[in-house]
Structures are given as structure tokens and as C-alpha cells.
Image 1 (cartoon, rainbow, N blue to C red):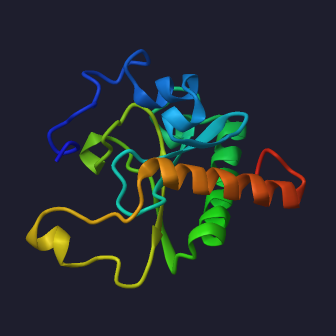
Image 2 (image 1 turned 45 degrees about the vertical axis):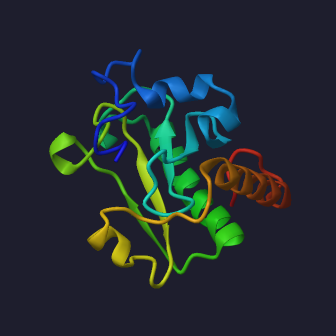
Image 3 (image 1 turned 180 degrees about the horizontal axis):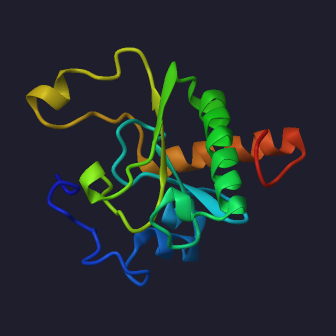
Length: 167
């Protein structure tokens, strides 16, 4: 209901109120940041569809995919793939939904700052709660999920000897 009621949603999408612009200035645990790259970062969705629902966001306040620099677009893709590897390692999902909603009419809650959704999926994860009660049971607290994923990211990055992107 907090999401539906617009709690914590900025009055406008300017950089000073944009949560995706403010998040990198916070401590990782406080901002739910899982990994920081050079041009983009990975953060837990504050209103997840499933446990481990991640967002890959460029640091730069840009609305459109076509407005990304080559480096931003490349890292956004690499971090999306790395997020899938980390989620597979720590949560063993059966599949993923990946996507970007470009513009408010397309469903973007914060249309002025591009973000890629990485949603882990499990067989049977859609149950009667969303239909009957208009809610969904999530078995993990966001802080615990962030710690699990951040640890998994560090483990896989260490194994790959690459701190920027898990290959």
C-alpha cells in the first residue's frame, strides 16, 4: 500500500529529489546498494515483486536508454548479467524477468531516471495473495536480502578476480 499511496515518491523527477540520484550518496546498507560499478550501480527495489528484485541504475540522471553513453550501456548490460549470476548463486531462481519501463505511460514509477529491473522468479511464486488480498508475501527482509546478495557479489567477484563485474 505504501507504493500505491505514493509514499517516498518524489514530487518531481529532478535530480535533487530523484531517489536513484540520492542513493549513491548513502551507505550501502542504508541505501540497499548491492554493488557499485564505474558508471552504474545495483540496488534492491524498495517495493520488490519477489525477494532479490534488483535495479541496475546509471549514476547519471538520464531517462532514455538511447541517451546512455556507450560505457553506461555496456556496464548496464554487464551488471544485469552479473546480477543474474549472483542471484542464481545465492537464491537459485528458476528464471528471471528483465525489463525497463521507458516513460510514465509505459509504467515507469520514476520515469526521469532509467533503471533496469532484474526479477528472480520461481515456479509457483505467483499465488492467491495478489488476487485475493492485493498483497504479496515476501519471506525476506530487505536488509537481509541486500547482505546476502552483496556477500554473493563479493564472493563471485573474488573468484573471477574482477571487482567491477562478476563474469
